[in-house]
Amino acid sequence: MGFQQGLSGLNVAAKNLDAVGNNIANSSTIGYKAARAEFADVFASAAGAAASSQIGIGATVAAVKQQFSQGNITATQNPLDVAINGSGFFRLSSNGAISYSRNGQFSLDKNGFIVANGGARLTGYAADATGNVVRSTPVELRVSFADLAPQATTDVRLSLNLDSRADIIATAFDATDPSTYNSPTAMTIFDSQGNAHSLTLYFRKTASNAWDVYGSLDGTVIGSGPIGSMSFNGSGALSADTTLSLNVPLTNGADPLDFDVFFAADKVTQFGVDFAVSHLQQDGYTSGRLVGFSIGSDGTVMGRYTNGQTRAQGQIALANFTNPNGLAPQGGNQWVETADSGQPLLGPPGSDRLGSLQSGALEDSNVDLTEELVKMITAQRIYQANAQTIRTQDQILQTLVNLR
Image 1 (tube, helix red, strand yellow):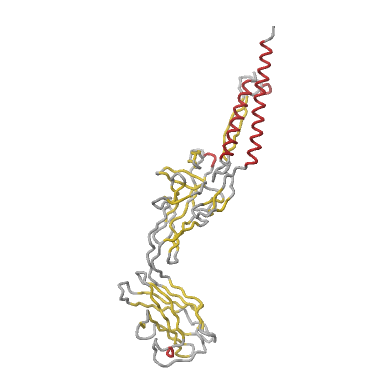
Image 2: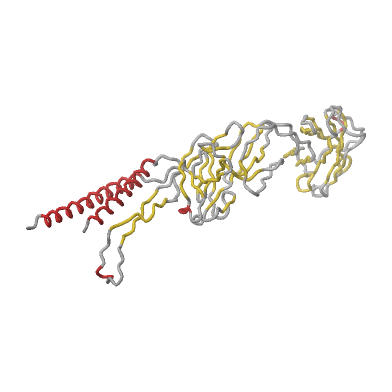
């Protein structure tokens, strides 16, 4: 009797319509992956039956598999919106329960944790006090709003040219008398409390290809003579790298300023052109407050501070699976690991088989509405055809009943 085949056909067609309807319903769900109903035929096996004479007893739903193809990426204005471009899943923690998602709509909770809709916390690699990311066991990522501590200057570097045409000066050095030195330059450095100080260097030609360097801090001359000297060869190049080590006591309660002034042989010249400083660099800074943060393509959460510094606060970790279709969907754009999926392969974005991240963007659903609508029409026709099979079988049965 053909009722069994028709009923099974109605059932699988309804399941197919369910899958299509669910895809259409989630066509605007961020990070959603379209599902596809897969079917198989059904045979009733009988011992000794010839394979060529067996007729199937219908169809069944073999599996409903999600398609983990890439969705379109749409730019947004929220820096905490993050899209994965490539393979991988965000790793989320909800009271220790781990789940995985492609939905990058994140925000900050009241404690500074980066959370998904529903409150699950994004996990990744923590950064130490100096901003170095430590790639060990993933932790819940948290943005710290604490002030960035100041750093005293320890290294000063200059690139400059001293005018070889300058006159040799024989009179005693006096910082207040420009006639006792050839060229000055000033820069700002910082003490251990983040206080700014003005460091002025004075360059004084003492002989052909020979220069003395004097210094002052906040208008007070450092030491009783030159803090160092430089010599040049006949082509105007600095004879060797030159380091001037200084230790200047302070009266404001901060630690003494202990720093080096470094002149690289390939950055300092003595040519017959005007004195000029092309580059000044020092490694100190005052304290700073967090004014914003960004997420890089490698997942690094980088804080920006009022003192112009940036510091890593952590790095997003991505997870991938040997068999993503083995993941169990939990709703809320989340999956959990199963024995079929295999264990998660964790790593920073852009490494191994993991995609990169795009901040200020979201991955759209990969549902193709046009394709789904065509599938819906096809499924509807299949449903009608199976209903017609049952109707025809009913007519045949009615004819048999009416035989006399």
